[in-house]
Image (cartoon, rainbow, N blue to C red; front, top):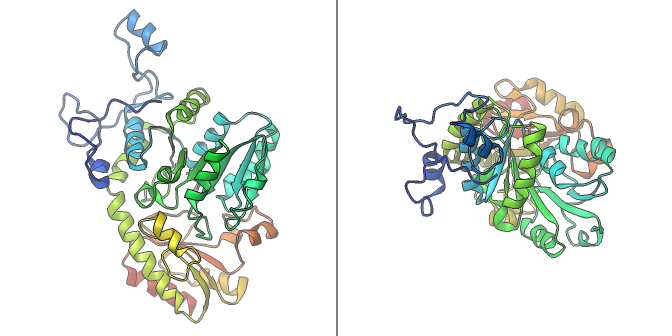
Length: 400
Ligand SMILES: *Cc1c(COP(=O)(O)O)cnc(C)c1O
């Protein structure tokens, strides 16, 4: 789908900054002169006459026909994300996984092959191993530290290189520019799930990504209210994704899109604070005697610190660490937490602690978990927006 023309482009957007566009790219005002974009809870739209009806269905005009295809609120949300990511076009989905699945499904044929980083979101991993084989789509995995070996694993039927950075839950950082140039050299589609960074911290298209996927459920909404997903990038690829999705029906609801457009208005200020809090927590944990190791992209001890600095504006909201004492100590830590939430989500204003081995990555075998660095004593903290002293105090008492 082309960029919707419904948004307010009265003022040149070219020279405006990220924060300004996030707020000022909004729907054209209606006759009521509302200040904040209204919600369009309508499943369909009317035609002016027989000719309008024919031309609309023939897609001779770009207009809203039915909300499975497009809706003003989803268009507003997509437009904001396109602007943030520097993308030509996009499509919004009911969840991050709907975006991941529909993107693959629209672009791949039976017999195609995916080259994916081994460290990916658990459900994406499940698609590769439990569902895509049904349609004769094969996946092989590369290690985050072995990009040199990657070219040798490209097959004649390879179509897509897929990666996340930083990764979940190990917060490894992948060299997006290196991946982008390998993809370009071999004429492959390079897709980045940018959920952990958000477009405020990292724009993968700058490093050669063709498509960028987000779970809007995480940092984009940032307040744990709605599920959403979005894919943005090259217009010809988005067109295929749009054709597929308009028929299969994974579209984002207008209500959720409206919530997300509001959420994006505060993305920059929220993420600044998420990152400030996360870095302080990581520094605290680094000096704690009961902690074996801490990983956070903007800690100097992170193996990819320099790369993270090059690719990202700040380190993100997720800190990973290992409690010493393995599973027993890990369980005790979770049982002692008082303020933070024990939940599987992330990127929320509420800080969340998760035990990846028994939750998000429990479907992986122990060996697969080991390969992506998930140990039994590993804790993933999604650092929220509470006062940092309260976050540290809770983690500190739980470690004792
Ligand atoms: C949560 C998540 C997804 C899936 O998003 P949903 O909105 O839960 O469907 C995909 N990728 C990453 C990295 C995620 O964290």
